[in-house]
Length: 548
Picture 1 (cartoon, rainbow, N blue to C red):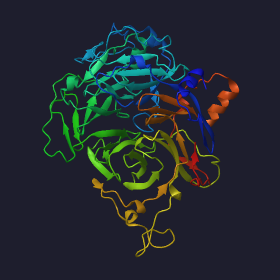
Picture 2: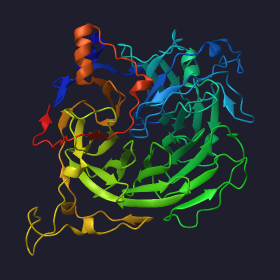
Picture 3: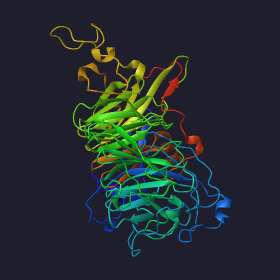
Picture 4: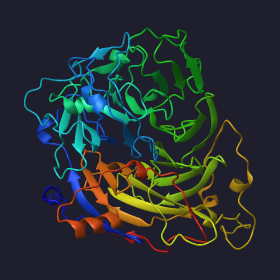
């Protein structure tokens, strides 16, 4: 662990710098945070969210291309990859980035209108901004920070200050043409798209060459709650708001064009309205229900969209057809987070009932719940990079590894073997549920109607799973976790980040060098599925939990 990590961890007495799993120890490599002196709380505090982005080395044609925007150098963003952030376990491959930025006719381009003066601060020109690197993007108060994941420095290399509102959500995508690969949603409802490379290139603390959407809340003035690129969507992105609406934007369309939608007739019903003019942006409004959209996530192919909200319902939509496929309710309170498996078969949710729920998209119902958190579950994700141990033989089994974090400051890891889940049986007269007699519970007999929202089944009718690992990772409540090929990254609500190296990488780092540097991800790291199809390997649910 680096000296920076030791310095931060010294403020967290009693926290272990490792946790054990059957495949070995995950070790705390180092920590990242933000300088407290930079933060401003004039607009209130916002929960920190995390995005991980990988930038490829810029090509020769990019370096020599003439700029189209003088203030920003006109550098078109290089291809990059999102390792599971905002959209669960979604992984995006690299694309090329030849040429220069193309100006979008009529777009609202700003160069600092969202920023503050460039006086003293941590932002400095990044010497290797055009080289390959992995970056952490996170928000705290009214500032967006960018840190170099490969650096042992705990402080960010770039900060972008917003003078009128707080950044509350962000997303990164490499497939977008035109260079603007980073989305930022604000508490005021405003939305920006920018080039990550251009932000790193500029030494100031302002947004550079940004496109501005929903300026001053002209379309919707409620808080942005979540934002995501549509996979394979060619520049299409969606923004969820606190009033229960989701807006669909096209990045290359004018962000200042007049756009109006018909009045919502029934606030309690799902309804989709498309813009009347082909020039309008956003191009569509999805009214989900009357309440906050807390999180949204796309399946890896972009065909389906999952949302969770204040009313406690998971809703899964066919995005292209504008149709509700199915939905179900939590056992208590709001749902706060959701994530897809990369094969599209399962969805994780977590929320105020302290449970992690596993939903089958094929059966359109909850198939398991995980009990282990002592407070609200604030982040869930499938580990698409994990492979089950001793996975050789002739049979076939599907095992999923996923993680969750909560306001109880704990990081939990879970293993789920779907073909080994024991289905609870109906109770006998006056008796308790039994696994030895009776018939399958009604929850498993019933067929969920397409397009309907289902109430939560009896908790006795749903298989319960226990965590493989329960580790108190931070002092503060946690807000999110992301899996990468080399590590698990966690962030607290206050914006403190920890990088936990996987056993194989932690061991190789220790044997090769005393200086711990996270290896850079590559194209080969892209997982094909989050499930592990093993030959004649049967991975049993752990009989005990590793507590640390």
